[in-house]
Image (cartoon, rainbow, N blue to C red):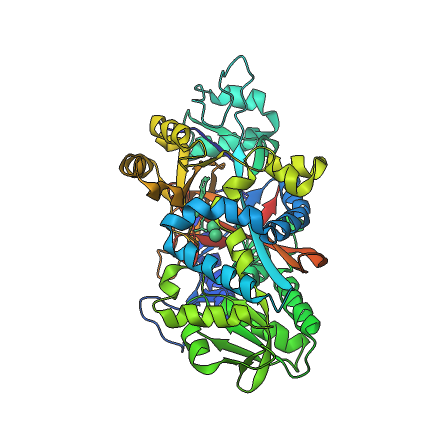
Length: 535
Ligand code: ADP
Ligand code: MG
Ligand code: MG
């Protein structure tokens, strides 16, 4: 089935004049390099240089009301996840089936069981969270024109004239599309308000790009000024994610309250996304010069750290106050039992963990799916307005467990696989299945317990935007492409099971990918960094 997709207007008319485009890209690349919008080269890794991170030249449009809604919802979501992470019975029941077939989640779970049995020595946890959302384009047809009234309906052919009359103020944009020859009968210009935010996932571990994203609006402002559109800058929201996230780390540090204690960043063997990580270190060093930060891999933690008799984690002779994981979220980051031993040692210690193990479990896809089941949000949040606001951003999420309606979900997905995404309990991008692969996997797993390791999710169909993606080594000028965006809102929460000590929304990131790419992880090389331009 060919899906219909709506389109949002880009912030300035495209395609751009080729000469202007080449000129501004050269400037933007230098701006990016000189302000750390960069990454290490995966093919020719060296610590002596960075290259530009892929970025979108013009800030991508995002409806203002939906952006504000996402921002305002973050504290509610932070609190929800905090409660979920501290509800032992809920996590146990929810993850039970997945644990039987998913070794990685089971290993995390075992650590959680062990530390609970021994007694949790650090009741405070630090969450640096990112809620990821996409816009879902609503079908603009009236009920009598479109029986299904879902984003997946087959939109009827719409003449340019009828768009102009139906969406009068978008007339000039229609002309733009028409002149480009981009207009197709199944693309329809969309009013911003026809798009509603839907949650893709909730990240509780190593949520990245808060730092680089804080620099990006300045780059987009520079680009717009160079193109003679400085007047548009007012539509770009400030982004203070970096200072907000680092504020969370230092607040947790102060709660630990041991003079001379240090902060530990748990890092990968090779950090490609070095700028994003280092900016946190630079920021903390700037605001709190007395605090020492160490970077260590799990293997180095295994070799170099120890627990003292007070259960303090000791590194370089000093107690560790805060452990911030930028690694440890995927199986490849635990190549041997040493890494798992290191993780257990950290969890056993008095250090404040970001995230503590129960937070990582709460961030699994299975938990996301369980939260969408009837009555579950109410259990955590009561029946008030906030519960409705959270439910509103959920899209269809279905269990594949044998004892939880999984058979119905399998049948539904087999009947129309294009409508769904099949997701395992993994992080870091590139793990989900789409379209024909959903079908194939479900047929293969239909009678196997293995399917409990996955959840089924309705596919969100965001509106298209025309834009230019600038990549290291990519063509200049790049082609004008159809893109789709994913907005991430950052939150910081600190608290114990009983008490929340701090709960804030601290900033955002926007990632944009080619419309026909299934996934858009920037670190995974698929997406590009972007900034929202509010419509
Ligand atoms: P991960 O934890 O690996 O990042 P995600 O749930 O974020 O897992 O999925 C990875 C990517 O797949 C997302 O960034 C998004 O581009 C795409 N994706 C995930 N779920 C959906 C969905 N329901 N509809 C459309 N795209 C999705
Ligand atoms: Mg994730
Ligand atoms: Mg994701």
